[in-house]
Structure formats: C-alpha cells, structure tokens
Image (tube, rainbow, N blue to C red; front, side):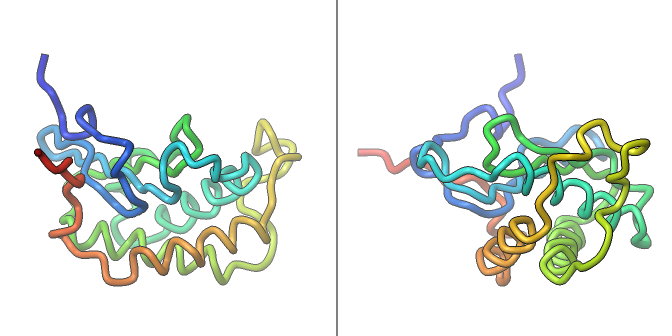
Length: 156
C-alpha cells in the first residue's frame, strides 16, 4: 500500500495551517487545519457547518470553480479537506485565504441553508464561523508553498 504524507501525520506536533495530504495525478488534497489536535479546542458543529456552506459557495463562484472537487469537514472537527484539480499550490493557498477572508466579512443569509437546501439547516452559527475564520486568517496570512509540507518529528 502506498503511504501518503497525510497517513504519516504526527498529531503531537501538527500546528494549524494548510498542508498537502496527498497528490493523485492532477488532484491535490489539502488539509486545512484550523485547530491543534487533541487540545479540547475544536470547531463547533454549527461553526463548522456554516464555514462549509460559505466556503463552498465562494470557491464555486471563482474563475476556477470547476477545479474544486470537494470541500468538507474532517471528522475530528479540527478543520477541512479541499480537493482541487489542476490548480497550482500558490493559487490554492490564495483561494483558501480569499475564502476565509470572505467568511470573516460575510453578512446575510447563509448560502444553501434553507429547509429545502440543507439537511441540517437548524445548526448554523454565522458569528462563530466569522470569528473562527478571522483567527485562521492570522495563521495563514503569510503561508507559502514551502509551508505545505507536514512538520517532521525531530529525531533523537
């Protein structure tokens, strides 16, 4: 079995940021880590859900919206996965940064959050989502392609 970088994560040293989980041909999977692992500080379901809706809506309306394959939360509630096709790492980082900027400034109706559009329309929290987006923007404001590699554990 092929071992991918995402399968070798040391959660004791993983910090919030953006990392390449794996590359399969022209598809890149990014881990968007908003919270440190195993700290008890996780995204609430309602903030996570709201970020998901606004992020998806925003990126699908960009020039390369057709290159977005998937965006969704991780089961650990520490962040998200973004799968892209044929996008450069630099563009993907900027797209993530722009999407979180959009979320941090968003006002209005949460996209696709009505009873007919969302299977859990009662669990959204825009103020929390905006606050989480602002905090994450501070982490990734100077993120570059060189930062996309998971941190390696120090060897003794």
